[in-house]
Amino acid sequence: KGQGQRGSVPLWFEGGQTPIQKSTPKKKIINLNGPTLNPVSLIKIQHWIDLGRLDPTKPITIADLWNSGVTSRPKHGVVLVNNGAALLRSKIDLQVSMATEMAADAILKRGGSLTLVYYNRLGLRAHIRPWKWAKKRLPLPRFARPKPRKQHYFNSRLVTGEWCRFINKPEDVRYVKPEVGKIVENVVWPHMLELPPNTKNLWMYFRRKEEQEQIRAEQAAELLAKKAELAESSQSKTSTESSS
Image (cartoon, rainbow, N blue to C red; front, side):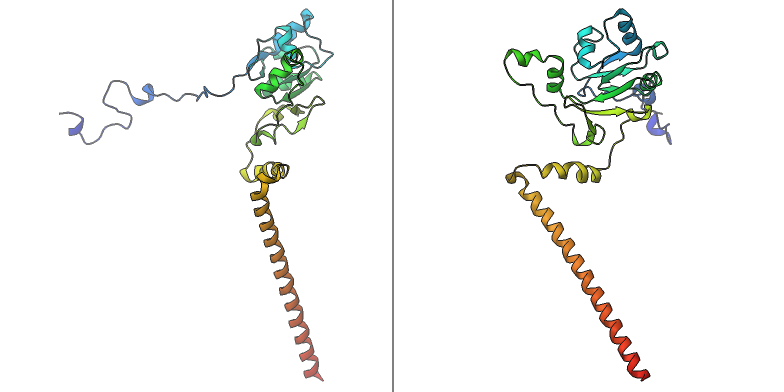
């Protein structure tokens, strides 16, 4: 008697009363160490516009959302959600960190514009609280370049220097992971050329080695072409001599 005396047991059976699909159900993986974005809804933005706390005739930035009280102090950025999208009436020019497709569609349908702006933690602090640097009589830090895997996504810059992505259609908010080869070719290698000489010597060595191999391949192709031309000319001479 017992489990060991039977031929087989169900795949989900673990010897207790709770099967495996109940003890360990499929759940969404939450990255606890990842950045947490403050959600902001369209209905709250419209309510703040009706109260006169936001000016729709000017670009609404993350600093404006925080100063007006729409959101608490953002640590990593602000994400725009589509709650109350049908109640949005104003034409707005909004700048946030991320947005959903339905929220972007609601803004674009009303003639507004949406821009996704990249900030690291230091850049976001300088954007929200610039007086912290003014008190110490220090210049504002430069806005950081996005990480290599995101540089194809944030491919434009604002007048103030932030890297951004202009949304022309709702599908533009999607992030498509690029291929590794394209990242190295279009992002990593051009930046390595800008580094000081002591850090790019190794890269220059491999780059020159690739260029030398290309030159050798081109020279070999030219030699083969010349040999083929000489062979054709010799064959034509022999044919004319035999005919004469």
